[in-house]
Image 1: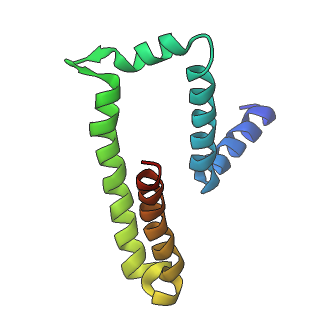
Image 2: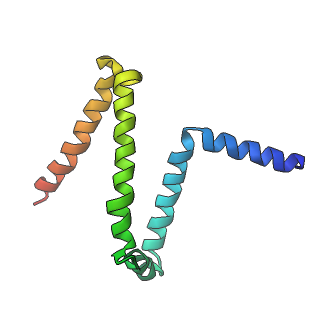
Image 3: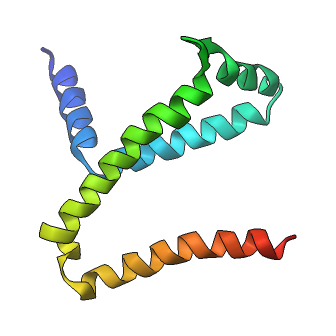
Length: 115
Protein backbone atom coordinates (compact mmCIF):
# COMPACT_ATOMS: atom_id res chain seq x y z
CA UNK A 1 0.00 0.00 0.00
CA UNK A 2 1.46 3.35 -1.00
CA UNK A 3 1.98 6.20 1.45
CA UNK A 4 -0.95 8.16 -0.04
CA UNK A 5 -3.31 5.18 0.24
CA UNK A 6 -2.24 4.59 3.83
CA UNK A 7 -2.75 8.25 4.69
CA UNK A 8 -6.23 8.31 3.08
CA UNK A 9 -7.13 5.08 4.84
CA UNK A 10 -6.07 6.50 8.22
CA UNK A 11 -7.97 9.74 7.57
CA UNK A 12 -11.12 7.83 6.60
CA UNK A 13 -10.83 5.57 9.66
CA UNK A 14 -10.43 8.56 12.00
CA UNK A 15 -13.44 10.28 10.38
CA UNK A 16 -15.71 7.23 10.68
CA UNK A 17 -14.63 6.65 14.28
CA UNK A 18 -15.28 10.26 15.29
CA UNK A 19 -18.58 11.40 16.76
CA UNK A 20 -18.86 14.12 14.13
CA UNK A 21 -19.11 11.70 11.20
CA UNK A 22 -22.80 10.86 11.56
CA UNK A 23 -23.78 14.52 11.97
CA UNK A 24 -21.80 15.58 8.91
CA UNK A 25 -23.30 12.78 6.78
CA UNK A 26 -26.80 13.68 8.02
CA UNK A 27 -26.34 17.37 7.15
CA UNK A 28 -24.96 16.54 3.69
CA UNK A 29 -27.86 14.19 2.95
CA UNK A 30 -30.34 16.83 4.14
CA UNK A 31 -28.81 19.46 1.88
CA UNK A 32 -28.79 17.10 -1.11
CA UNK A 33 -32.45 16.17 -0.46
CA UNK A 34 -33.57 19.80 -0.15
CA UNK A 35 -31.75 20.82 -3.32
CA UNK A 36 -33.10 17.81 -5.22
CA UNK A 37 -36.70 18.32 -4.10
CA UNK A 38 -36.65 22.01 -4.99
CA UNK A 39 -34.88 21.75 -8.33
CA UNK A 40 -36.05 20.81 -11.80
CA UNK A 41 -35.78 17.12 -10.91
CA UNK A 42 -38.21 17.51 -7.99
CA UNK A 43 -40.99 15.51 -9.63
CA UNK A 44 -38.63 12.60 -10.35
CA UNK A 45 -37.31 12.84 -6.79
CA UNK A 46 -40.82 12.41 -5.38
CA UNK A 47 -41.48 9.56 -7.82
CA UNK A 48 -38.35 7.80 -6.52
CA UNK A 49 -39.75 7.79 -2.98
CA UNK A 50 -43.08 6.42 -4.22
CA UNK A 51 -41.48 3.52 -6.15
CA UNK A 52 -42.73 0.13 -5.00
CA UNK A 53 -40.48 -2.43 -3.30
CA UNK A 54 -42.14 -5.62 -2.12
CA UNK A 55 -45.61 -4.12 -2.43
CA UNK A 56 -44.81 -1.03 -0.34
CA UNK A 57 -43.31 2.32 -1.31
CA UNK A 58 -39.70 3.14 -0.49
CA UNK A 59 -41.00 5.96 1.70
CA UNK A 60 -43.11 3.48 3.67
CA UNK A 61 -40.15 1.11 4.17
CA UNK A 62 -38.05 3.95 5.55
CA UNK A 63 -40.76 5.50 7.73
CA UNK A 64 -42.02 2.26 9.25
CA UNK A 65 -38.98 0.01 9.06
CA UNK A 66 -35.73 1.88 9.29
CA UNK A 67 -37.09 4.60 11.58
CA UNK A 68 -38.29 1.91 14.01
CA UNK A 69 -34.77 0.50 14.20
CA UNK A 70 -33.31 4.02 14.52
CA UNK A 71 -35.53 4.97 17.46
CA UNK A 72 -34.93 1.60 19.12
CA UNK A 73 -31.18 2.26 19.02
CA UNK A 74 -31.67 5.83 20.27
CA UNK A 75 -33.80 4.54 23.15
CA UNK A 76 -31.21 1.93 24.09
CA UNK A 77 -28.45 4.54 24.02
CA UNK A 78 -30.54 6.88 26.19
CA UNK A 79 -31.20 4.16 28.75
CA UNK A 80 -27.48 3.36 28.89
CA UNK A 81 -26.65 7.05 29.40
CA UNK A 82 -29.29 7.40 32.14
CA UNK A 83 -28.00 4.44 34.13
CA UNK A 84 -24.24 4.44 33.48
CA UNK A 85 -23.31 7.51 31.47
CA UNK A 86 -23.19 11.27 31.80
CA UNK A 87 -26.94 11.56 32.36
CA UNK A 88 -26.91 9.39 35.50
CA UNK A 89 -26.83 12.53 37.65
CA UNK A 90 -29.94 14.73 37.66
CA UNK A 91 -27.79 17.87 37.36
CA UNK A 92 -26.32 16.66 34.06
CA UNK A 93 -29.64 15.34 32.75
CA UNK A 94 -31.64 18.52 33.41
CA UNK A 95 -30.70 20.38 30.22
CA UNK A 96 -31.45 17.46 27.84
CA UNK A 97 -34.75 16.81 29.64
CA UNK A 98 -35.80 20.46 29.27
CA UNK A 99 -34.72 20.44 25.61
CA UNK A 100 -36.79 17.30 24.96
CA UNK A 101 -39.87 18.80 26.61
CA UNK A 102 -39.39 22.02 24.63
CA UNK A 103 -38.91 20.02 21.44
CA UNK A 104 -42.31 18.42 21.97
CA UNK A 105 -44.30 21.39 23.24
CA UNK A 106 -43.05 24.26 21.06
CA UNK A 107 -44.03 22.63 17.73
CA UNK A 108 -47.42 21.67 19.18
CA UNK A 109 -48.00 25.23 20.38
CA UNK A 110 -46.99 26.61 16.98
CA UNK A 111 -49.38 24.19 15.28
CA UNK A 112 -52.32 25.04 17.51
CA UNK A 113 -51.48 28.75 17.49
CA UNK A 114 -51.49 28.86 13.68
CA UNK A 115 -55.06 27.56 13.45
